[in-house]
Amino acid sequence: MTPPKSPAVEALEQEQARQSRDVGSELEDGLKSTFPASDPVSATTTSNPTGIAPSPSNEVGFGSDAPLVDKALAATSEPEQTDGTTFASSREELEALKAEIARLRESASEIGSATVRVAKAQASDVLVDLKQRIRAKPLPAVGIAAVIGFVWGMTR
Image 1 (cartoon, one colour):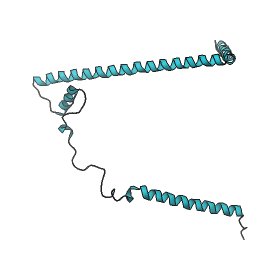
Image 2 (cartoon, rainbow, N blue to C red; image 1 turned 90 degrees about the vertical axis):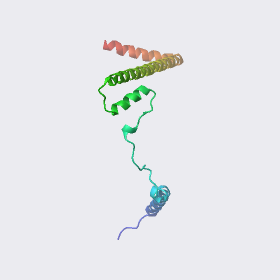
Image 3 (cartoon, rainbow, N blue to C red; image 1 turned 180 degrees about the vertical axis):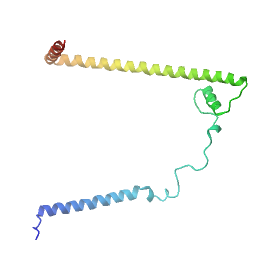
Image 4 (cartoon, rainbow, N blue to C red; image 1 turned 135 degrees about the horizontal axis):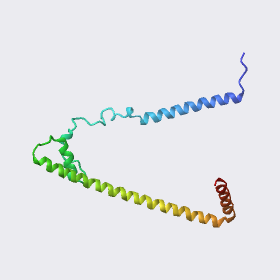
């Protein structure tokens, strides 16, 4: 014979069984109400577009701010001509690309200077905070400085 279970063990098992039934039913209810297969509209419509996508050669404008760059990109998809117009258009493309590089270089330098300004502002904030802490607690600050000086002197 197996020994009878204590009332505490029986109560624990009953509570665990009740909780597992409650969680399962809540989970099932949540899944039934939010699962896409239970939505009658999702069975009849698709989110994927149908039809034929336009080929890249049909796209004339790429929509950027530099129209000469757009022309240069469109010209790369067309076969090259062997007359003098190809040389002139290549020169225009080159000038457009140079202008784009100049704009990118300018924006990169602006980002760099802004980063330097932010770093300087943060460093000055740290310095002000350090000064305030030293004024608030001068003795611990002197002790820390003495320890740092001692360690620095021992390593030299």
